[in-house]
Length: 148
Image 1 (cartoon, rainbow, N blue to C red):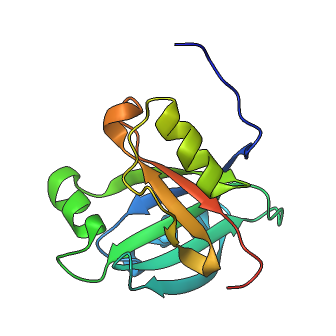
Image 2 (tube, rainbow, N blue to C red):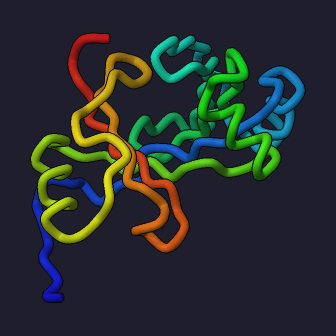
């Protein structure tokens, strides 16, 4: 299959999502490593409580750490922790046009968990690429919007 490059992605890692059973008990490490706690947020649609950490350098374009705590047993994060334990759950890539990126990934043979964008944290739009088509890595596409 020929390689096709699309200009719909910045090629920037937006954040690394880490599944945890408890935000508070797993925050200290990131603070010691120099990350600053930015904010907490609840995303009912995804069934998670989220804690964001930014680089202590203050550059908002640097990748963030996103701790994810399940809200209930039906949460995908709860299922992930039950199967795999706590740890890196996904790698999020910033995209400029999520709908076009989804279409291009599908036409390039990748399997999408979400064929239409979902509501993400801080008003973003998100969609997940299935790990069975990415070499075992859950990829989250993130399009930032102007309104939270």
